[in-house]
Image (cartoon, rainbow over all chains, first blue to last red; front, side):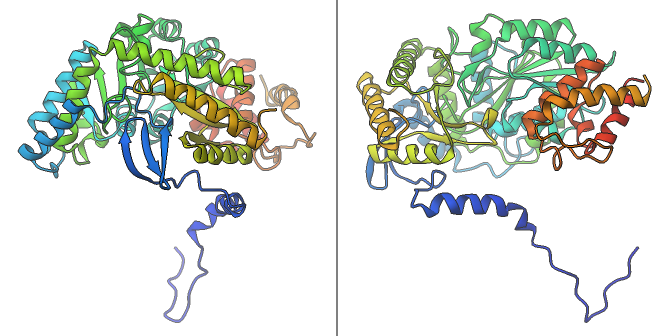
Amino acid sequence: MTDMLSENETAAHVDLFSKFDPLIEMRRNLLSTGQEDPFGLVMERVVSPTVAVCNGRETILLGTYNYMGMTFDPDVIAAGKQALDDFGSGTTGSRVLNGTYAGHKAVEQALCDFYGMDHAMVFSTGYQANLGIISTIAGKGDYIVLDIDSHASIWDGCKMGDAEVVPFKHNDIEAMEKRLRRIPEGAGKLVILEGVYSMLGDIAPLKEMIAVAKKYGAMVLVDEAHSMGFIGPNGRGVAEDQDCLDDVDFVIGTFSKSVGTVGGFCVSNHPKFEIMRLVCRPYVFTASLPPSVVATATTSIRKLMHAGDKRAHLWENSKTLHKGLKDAGFQIGTDEPQSAIIAVIMPDLEKGAAMWEALLHEGLYVNLARPPATPANMTLLRCSLCAEHSAEQVQQIIGMFTRAGKAVGILG
Amino acid sequence: MDREETSARIAALIEPFNKKDVAITNETRFTDDLEFDSLTVMDFVAAIEDEFDIIISMNQQAEIETYGQLVDAVVKLQG
C-alpha cells in the first residue's frame, strides 16, 4: 500500500470527462455550421399521434414509434384519468413491497390474454425488461448467443450478467448454428433474437433460427418491441406471423411503442417463471409504474387485440412510403417494406444532419440515427409510420422528402 | 497444434484485415496498431473461430489486446 499524502501535498487531478472530448469536438464541429441540434428537439405542443408543434411550426411526426396511434385514444385517456383519481399519481415503491396495485395485476392479465401465455411480468421500462431478464436467467457458465445488431438494452443485459457472450453476424443462420455447435456440452444456452431490428426495419427469419436453436437445446428469447400490435394476425409480433410463437420461451416487449405509454414486460409459459419476481434485480430494486400508466396500458393492449383494420392501414402506409421514397431515388434499408420502419440511408453524417434539418423546415420530424447505434457505421433517417397517418399525409411526406433531398444535394 | 503452427495459421488469417500491411509481432495491438473497428473484430474473430473450430466469447476477447495474447488464447482453447 502507498503512503498517505501529507496535509500540504496534492495528487494530480484527472478530469473523468476527458474521455468524452472526441464526441464534444465532433458535436462542436457539426453545430458550428449553424446546423440545428438533431438530438435537442423540443415539442412545444402535441396535437395528435401524428402532429406536433416544434419551433412554432406544425410538424408531421414520422419518428415516434407510436405505431398504432394509441396515445390520444379517448378510452385510453379516460382510463388514465380515472386511475389518477382513484389510486394517486405514483406507487412510491417496488413491485415486491408496496408497489403492486390492482392495476399492475390487471395489465399483466391483459398481456397474458394478448399473447395467450401463462405468465407476464411488467417492468418500469422496456430497457429494464431486457436488462433484468437476460442478466438473471443467463448466469456463470451459461452461454448467450445473440445477433450482432441487437439493441443496446440486450447488450447491457449481457454485460450485467456473468454468462459467456457470443455474437453472430446479423440474421445469419449458419453463423448462429456454428456457434451453438461449439458450446461445451452441458452448458446452458440462451439465444437472443429480435422480431424487427429497429435501425433498418428488417425482420428476422425467426422460424428457421428458432428451429436451429431448439435443435441445439437452447432457450429462446425474442424482443418484439417494434412488432407488437402491428405484425402478426393478432399483433403478437413476428414470431406469431411466422407461426413459431409456441417455440419462443420468453417474449420481451414494451409499452412505449404501439401501446403508447411507458413500461416493459416479459411473457412466458415457463412453469417456474414467477420466481423471476424475487430474483430479478431491475424488477425488485426500482419503483413500479404509476397507476395511470398501467391503466392506460391495460386499455390500450385490450384494444390492440381487435385492431385488425388499423394494422391493415399501417401496412398500406408502410408500402406507400417505401415505394414513394424508392421511386424518388432514395436508398432504403430494405428492398421491400418489412415493418413500420422505413430507414433512408444517408451518404454521411453531415449530409444526414443537413437533410434532417431541411425536413424539419419542411414540417417533418424523422429520427437521425448514427453510429454506434447503427449497423455498418451508417447514418440513417429513420421513419416510423403510424396507423393514424392518413394517406394524404403519406403523400405529403414523400413530397417533403423529395424537395429536401434536392435542396441538400442527395437527389440529382 | 503447437504455438508456432497456430501462430502461422492466425498470421495468414490476419492478412486480408491488415489493410496497411503493419508488420505483425507478438506485441502488435489490434485496436491501436491494426486499427480494427468493432465490425472488423467480429469478422476476424469469426474467421479464427471457423479455422480452429472454437468459440472466443466476448468476455475472452476483452482480455485479448495483442497478437501474442490471441495466439496464446487460441492454443489454450484448442485444449
